Image 1 (cartoon, helix red, strand yellow):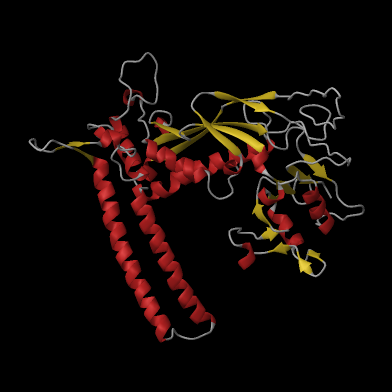
Image 2: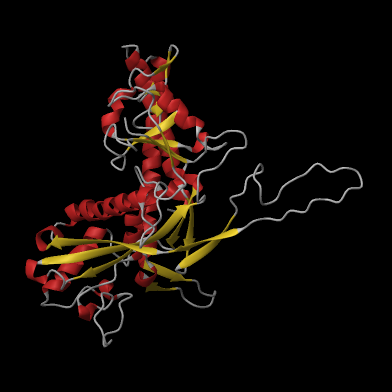
Length: 431
């Protein structure tokens, strides 16, 4: 999205929000708009209509610019125009549904495939079948639609954007690692120095964290009947693939084994478990559970932390108080941006990755900035195959996402004057 279009959309959104405030304020007082408010509302409506017209014109120009490239010329020569479909990330297709419909038409045979499908395809004649070669049954998916799937995979409850993420062009990356603390017994340390005495020398203690990309794949067969419905396919397939990629990525970032997939935050020795209170009954959540989990966070982690909670545990949060004050705030003015409210001021993510209620891990508190991840530059790669499910009258769409990650710390952090360890990855124990 170019800067001009983004600015117009932002101005329109602000105008709509201002108009909504006027109407809601009058509605809350069970009255109509007064004269001054009606005048403001009419001005905002005129502004919204004007911005809508500007946005429509800008979008129309952007669409036209995608299909052609104007070649500047000198004063004594004429200006020529040539097609620029190859430079268009959509390859000339208006939507993913239109692209998939073109794939279906090509698969049915009996005619020349849409020439836009051939942009970026490998030349025929290779010694093995591959899905970037139209002759072998597939067509390359325009990069814009791959980006769309990747963007959808990072919405809602995605954990990857919360991590310390690096896009890499190769297959791996090494990161320096220093897990020493100022109060520890190794690494860089400071000493009180007596006059004329010899200084005590210390040196950094560095390790290396090696991350290597692992492949995550979503393979979706789509029937010819669905391929024929451009609108339905546009709303169905990208979201379906993104949902699968998001789920698997989240699960690996939390509980991955590290074997052919990322090492999860709770899979190694970095995570800790806060035990239940003495005599605490099953299917309950106590104030002490919550406060003790917070106390085990490293300094600076609380403002960046989020709660991961199984849906079945939500009813147990109602009624939790600190003195006369509730510590769980459902959706309200104080919990905007967090669909399930906040617990002790931190947002709640209701998650199917959390364990069953009363089991270890039904409630977790995490600061994912302590988790390092790498992803393949470009996000999701997509391809098609018309032969894989040929006998079922279906075309296969494949999305490949390459990712790796591991906690920045290999073990929980020992404190200077306490036996309790600290960690950015905390689970509540079974009850």
